[in-house]
Image: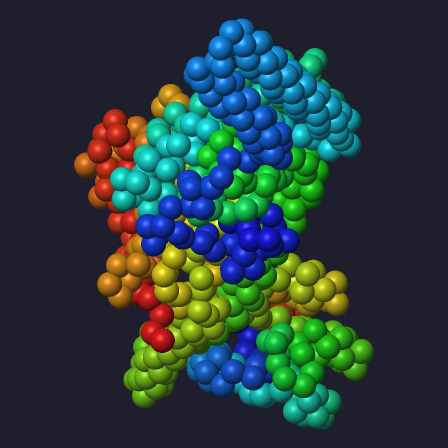
Length: 497
Length: 123
């Protein structure tokens, strides 16, 4: 079972998370697959019916065409008509049996659908599959990149996915009055903050046989629940008209997992804070001792000089010690800096795709709360970078939240796009929002410490982010157009092989 | 101020030497000790008029030294100085009867004030 994409946390190995790309230009198998409707199983009935009909027709017409032997023409014609009638009757019987079989099959399938102890959705993805096929035929093969760049096209397609029916379990799970609460376009229940719709399109383009995704959907009462959607994807174009999707409510699981991720992040941060606290204390001790000696020596020097007969030898010795102590204090600071720049950061080969997914997961709820539509696309050949995971994650979290806050005042859709690209020797990260934008004179100042545009903000975020990125040998800068939004760029050098 | 005999116990030589210079410029006699044990060994024979002690020292720390002084030489004023001013340690030192608790770098005026107090008490 091949899985195209999942945010399912238990599958969170980098391999499982990597989105496979079908960029070789081949069309997915379903584009040329045989029809798979219920009629296919009954094909032999049609064939038999067609044969009987053809034979009867051929027999009938040949008899009619033959010059009747004498006056016996009329009886020949009667015989021909009788044959044709028999043939029609046979066809009629066959069609009746076929219809009966179809009806019983459908009734059975419907009963299974309706009574299943799991949420089932019957959906029509015809328009989406045709759109994906059209893109592939136009030579656009990286579907993920295409829809990341054109979120409005994905939005249009989402409106064209139609929910045809849902079963009783779904109605109960969603707290709905009946199936009619759901029947209609998918975007009624799949909010714009959903990240998984494009993954479906990618799976379609790749010709995946099974697709599984974690989405969140809106219940009729307006509340949002997390679900796992799973479907077997059809093997032919016509099959997209009736895709049966299974949904499992994982809201509680997700909430518990979000708490776990938050706790782990907090723990990592807390251990850093403890390290910083210990360092600060030891630094204070190391620096305060020579400072104390300097103060005492200076005071002693003054006293030796202010004696009725100044003792210049003692005063000079005291001043010489001041110089020594000051040198010692300077060395302590230099040593501490060297220590800080080496030890606390835990550099390792870091998969930025994984780090970005973690960051998105950490801020997922907050983004949802801001009504943000998150789009994410990473090059599949992205090299690793040598970096501290927690720090880079903090930078990404910071940039994502900044983007979300920048769009707080803008009307929906609030697209936030994170892309990871391999450019030359660098990995380029771009976080683009469609918020209010930043005025040119502000743009230079946002990276200064204590610059804040937000009430209650310390204004340290971007300054710290830039420090952190530069400490990793990278760069962080912003581009912005007022009224259109901003893009924050981060480059990090790719790890050598 | 009446000159007296001041003992300085600190593992940091720079502080010891600086304090000796300062206190001598004021006319006091100064004895330097790099650790608590060497101080205790001598002080029982020739007790000073006042002790200035650091807290963080290898071997016996300043708080333990202070308690030992309370036990063996009650009435000997102790001034505690530290580069690591923690409230818990300060409270402990004061509870154990320290004259005062100063953090490095300290105002020399503060040392002189408490020293005058200690020597005045002594006389």
